[in-house]
Length: 257
Image (cartoon, rainbow, N blue to C red; front, side, top):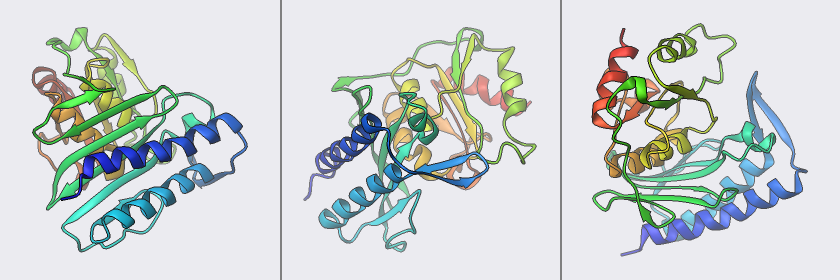
């Protein structure tokens, strides 16, 4: 049996070299997919490399990525990839960027790897095996009061046009939490909740590749992640709320107020 985790870690490190090289040279092309939705040639180069290597090792697996058409969509095992989470950060040299790869088998997420080569951060989790941050075991924070919690979120790509753009929820949490953060990378936000650097995270307008790997890491670190209804239909509904079990319940109440 192929070592899926080991192979993916090797692949994501190779992809990280492309990300780091583009970061250092600062001469990549930038394209606009929407009003505030940007993509670079680095996104595309990383995605191409990851797809080619995964197809080489796992030719029968499906592949769902942000920038390309889904591959082998009828497979019951698939990789879910975000080649560069935090593209706007990358363009602005703000170091909260990551490559994210998850593995889903028969609808269940079982492996997640998130890598930020700029800050040398590697988060890895496999179902039933716990989660690690640069090789060390991690766990969600033990904060039990929303008023003592540092939370993170973001805004959807159609925030200019969509009145349901998360601004209401920001206002709600602003007066109920210790502090709020907007770092522009859903994958890293989930990882930072997993390791206790953040206490909670919510966001809407997300896609599977934004959060798939982070979901595995968060869960294996003792956290809970659902949609705003407390169910696990986050891919279908495009929304997530994540925290330790106690804070998660409090955040759901705010989101459904």
